[in-house]
Image (cartoon, rainbow, N blue to C red):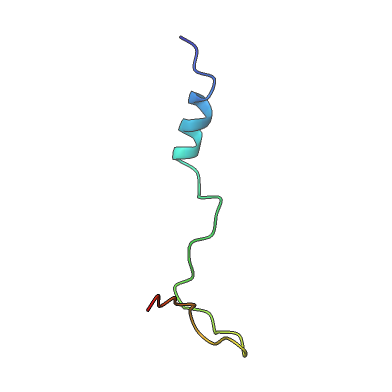
Length: 42
């Protein structure tokens, strides 16, 4: 069997992630931010 993706999969196991992790410090809210949208059906 030929697995063309095997070489790429193995190389990705040992490389750095290509995305940034969520910041450890939360960012500041925008000046006009009024909170999370919540729906109350009653």
